[in-house]
Image (cartoon, rainbow, N blue to C red):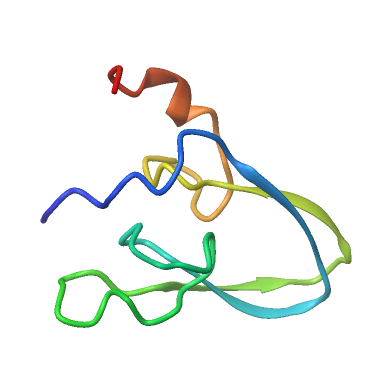
Length: 81
């Protein structure tokens, strides 16, 4: 499998309402951290997930987290640009 694009080297905090969301796995979406369909033609598919509580969440944008879609600090281990 190909490596996803690093959309950003920091997480993004977003207050979310309860509902179903689709997290971008490819890193190409212009609506990070959510999918905008930019993965079409690649091997990536978005991750559907459910939010049950309205609150602020920290979403991964480096696409290396071990807890998708949420940031786990993996961006701290990325090689320098």
